[in-house]
Length: 303
Image (cartoon, rainbow, N blue to C red; front, top):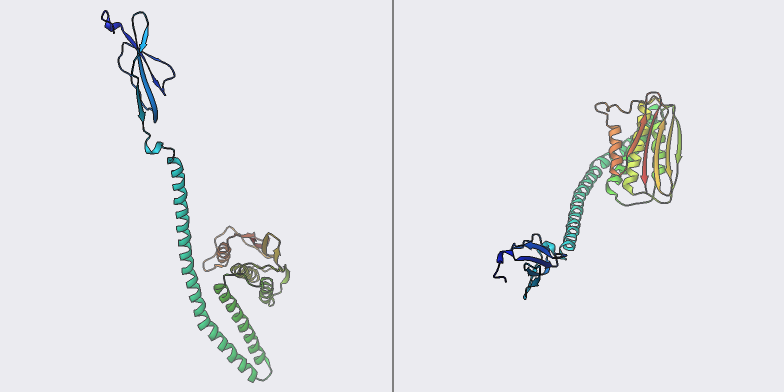
């Protein structure tokens, strides 16, 4: 205290835990602090006389600022764990929805398979047996030969329908007959045309999932059929290449080709169907063609 010139007394202060050194306040008798972090602090003041001598307070003020909930040590780990939990919950919910959708699709596929088996296949089998009985009663000649050819074609169609049912019903790997099925289909589709067929079909003890083999077979059939019907090709290559890491289906002709950038003609969905089948088994169909250069269709499956 000074009773001579009290207005000439100056002050300095320091907040331990925040200030690195003393703060000269002059004659001001207030101190301001903002945005103090949580922690323990100790505030002390010294008064200085005209000679510059300073004396501290006898009772410094200590106080504690408690952290807010988002400033506590557990907050960030809790947020990370919460985000992980939400992500896992969302993933599980997504899987459950996909499983529910898959079950609906599988149920519909099984229903279609049952309907085809109980109607189309049964009726087809009855018609085929009736034609076989009729052919057996006919005398040898052109009529009998024609009817026997019709019976043979009907039997082939019945085999194709059964293969389609197998594709609808199956979801697991079975003994592989993909190469043999592609060979039979390619020979059957080209035998009535003057096309030189070259087959390069690699066999493998390991098999692909039944659904993958089914879609590959259908893609090969559609590609061969398009070459036979529309390309005027003289030769046709059908290849099934297998390695340790991939399986590649290739159908290549030397026909007239077409502009692959054009939209398909109305009512023609063969190319679209091949793309959709490739997408169903998680890959892409590559189609290369140009007028006068033939057409190449390829699908690659990674093991």
